[in-house]
Amino acid sequence: MTNPNMLKSFMDDYINTTVKEIGEVYAWDVINEIFSNSGQPKNMDHYPYNNSVFYEIGDPEDKTTSWACNAFKTAKNANPKIKMFYNDDMISSMAGKYERKSDETYNLMKFLVDNDCGIDGVGFESHVDINFADENFTSIKKDIQRYAAIGLEVMFTEIDVRCNRKVGGKCSWGDGEWPQDMLEKQAHVFQGLL
Image 1 (cartoon, rainbow, N blue to C red):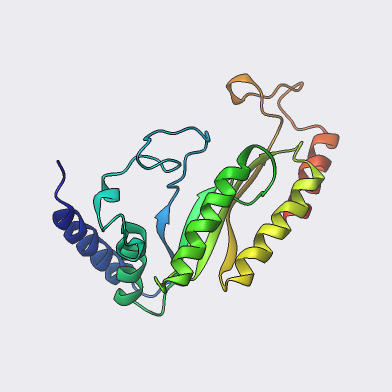
Image 2: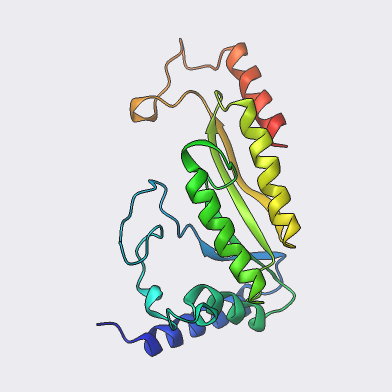
């Protein structure tokens, strides 16, 4: 059995030390990638989150003392000048395969804002390929707008537009150079995201 007070003390010490040692930066990812990509429970007690011992921090009946709120409050108190962000991959599109993950992330961010936990923004990692559908751009725009409506900034923290996703992540084309049509598709996706 884990000792929640020990975990909270460890988390607070780590965050305070880290925030003070990184000095003056624009933004910091306080929490990164806590949601399951698969949409399947990895731990039924904490679905749809990935497993973490830090879930033991706080009273489950009083989410304002939850580990996520605690992490953001601690970081913000350590340096109020730094913008504090949540960061995750595949949360920018409100449609398709990652819709549930996107909605769960938004719900947590709204909770953190509503409970004055010290969050300033959300980072979107976007790992897509050249066949990223145009309707996804509209979905991403709506997602950015819903975060803006609750007062959060949105940043694209990682963007890569790969060739087609194939088995094993490999693409095949002639001598290894991207043909012009693939470069144009890649440019279209980058332009759409921007």
